[in-house]
Length: 349
Image (cartoon, rainbow, N blue to C red):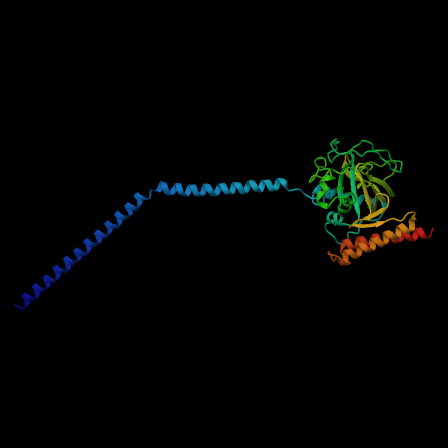
């Protein structure tokens, strides 16, 4: 009896376990079906085409923004212009001018010291330098450039009446000479592509009167010339005359046909002082002083020495605060020593 009871109990227990397992499997089956139904419902309510369209719309909008920025970049690049000391062709012209000067005189025009950027040094130098030519860099005459007008030179060079004076280069001091700030150089300079000077901010182009060639000489010292004539209808306008200037022919050497050939590329002018009208002597850096009537050569040199000394003090003690070894200071000191030497020669006569 006890054995039969045990067998019956084991059978009942086994059946309960089987039914319980079947019940659990049924519940799992219902859960899987419910999740599948939920996924299918989500897929129907959010078609893939809508999602793709939305993504495409977002990408298209971003692309439009990039195109707009790219167009702005092109506009900025097209409006960007190199300054005279930044353009490669002008930099080469300046170095060529300095080399030609040293070849003519045996002395450097500018003490460059240890500077590695000579064109930038010359651009800021307290010495005016200007380079002119009768033709553009490509050798074509530009008839839109203001004409030189009457030539009143006191040497044996031929007059340049009516010929186009093309200004290839002018540094800050040269621009100051004709009354221009450094950022308005386009009112004086001809572009490397032959583009004529243009009005800026409603201000007219500056026309200068300097010979573009030299005959029978390659270098001249103590050159004086009225380079800008006043507007007779404007009472506030004055003639501009460079005084005691140096000028020389700039030549470029090239190897052609098995030999070296020299080609003239322009005439350079360098000066420290200029006259505004008949009585005001000006120097780079805004220095202005009255010239007394009847001033002799030695007193004029003494005035220039005093002015140069003041300019050096301004470089060292002014806003720039430059040191003694700065190339600009060294160049200004070299000019001061040159003026003192000229004064000694004048007083010894």
